[in-house]
Length: 423
Image 1: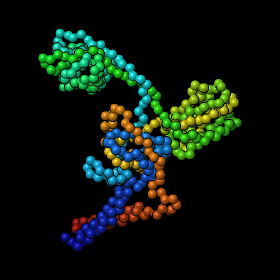
Image 2: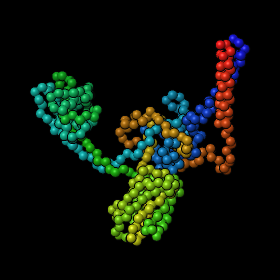
Image 3: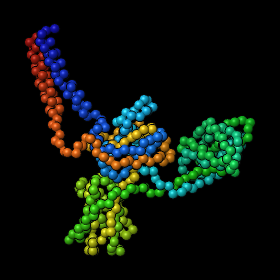
């Protein structure tokens, strides 16, 4: 190998040595945010029993977060024994951001007919007609008292002739309760068959006596909202027949609903427009009437909203008060026994993607609620403002890239001259 070739290899190695450390530093800066990059933290109750929990997101919590709520984290607050050894502080806990469970207003039972047994049925088969008109995933069965154990197969059909298996080897047993009948929920994959059939797998034994069958439906109510702290209201009635009402909040609260209370006049029908004073965009419009005073808007996180009311030739409306609210939100998470805290306030944080989102459908009941304590600033925000040090990493990176480019150009020119000389 010639001396010139050795010199070229040495120059390439030096260029790589300049660029790679700079790239590694830049990539390290672009990775996920650590615990100390969040501006606020709030304590959670100490967990003594493992299970699913709802961490309630109050208006005060959401005011400290980004508008898309990407910077919320649940973190261990101390050293606690976990499933795979001790878990240290700063470990992030997976969660799923959800709106609150809907309210339920009572239940109703839709009874299905128990149909006569057909010739091709086995002894003990029970046919049930699906009168709900929709797909169902469970049956409520009332059965005469029995101290025996049976094994069932559940099948479905749309014409009562061709049957298809839905669930097999269902073991049924009841403890002694002294009641005139037993109730059981027979769960299965969601199916929209017109007919269901229960077949007894045990041969040579008497079947259970199913008295009634049907489904239980819950009547859901409207979406639940949580009020945000009341805004300071200032009203200006302009000469252009418009009333401009400013709603100023102490913090940038997340608002999704505004309700106006009118003191006078008694009858009115006015066009109203809601703006975000900080975002300078129209958020919603509404015709205000005595029966329609609530404005639903897309989520907006702002300190100041403007309500523009077109009075036309009427006297301005006299407001009594204005209420703002947000949908009730929470973090659904699985927590082991230990101590935890809630983190927020990192404008560069991206929304995490946890595997837990694939398993939230297994939560059938409303988990216990955890209310965060008051938010306090973390140590990344000192009390006395200080001038941040200048960051020259970007300058160093670009300088290294420019040096490498010049070296590559020089090497290419030398290689071309060498090739021409040899030819």
